[in-house]
Length: 280
Ligand code: PAF
Image (cartoon, rainbow, N blue to C red; front, side, top):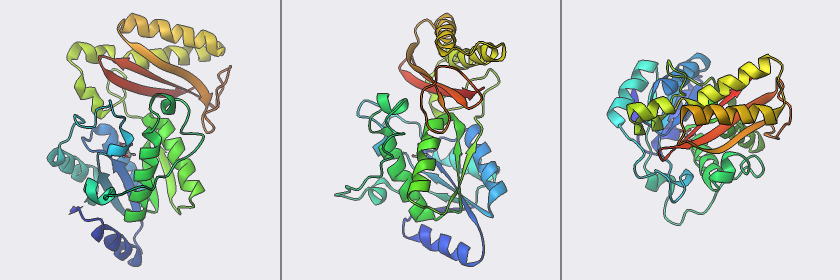
């Protein structure tokens, strides 16, 4: 496995690979990898000859009061995990190279970035789309793989890929969960054992909604009300940021759940903001 830190070497390596007829898949990450990332790398391996995994904790996607400084980092463990999952190249750029002095150009996906997560985190998606556009330019992938856990991020990035005409196949891979249903996330490490159990409230609420939809209850108001009750029962201290039922691709709100609906929610628990989603 090769490690590349230089933003000038990376495109050269990608060009050489392309010249040799190799296809490239990119898995962008912010490091502190877990089994969810390993699944993305394995998925990438299936769709291209060479897998590049980027590690970059992107300052531009954190709000001023968010956890950029304390976001967990462990490069050594990440390397071992990437190697085990089948990654070929680890790209670890420096912040000063991605955002040189006087940096002032951003990529914004206008509408899709404004709803759901965008309401609570106003500059978040602008940071995500800007860094991913840069990563696409530097690594020149044929395929890019993102996780469904951050589903709005995936929808926003898919739109960016289409709008900017990147010749990149866009793959959204399923969420990987712990045995008790908690969606894997680097931020889960912030919890104590007791808090960690309460974090399952998102999954329980989604599971309840799924069962209700299966049994024929499709009215979104009724579904939301039951989800709120489940969250309160599992985790009385949890603060619900939003529960939303929207169309999958357009993110437009719906009043009745159907096959093209996705339910997503964000909950703040012991100072950690958790998100999750489910399609029915
Ligand atoms: O999902 C993430 O880890 C990040 O938002 C991404 C896509 C790597 C951009 O920084």
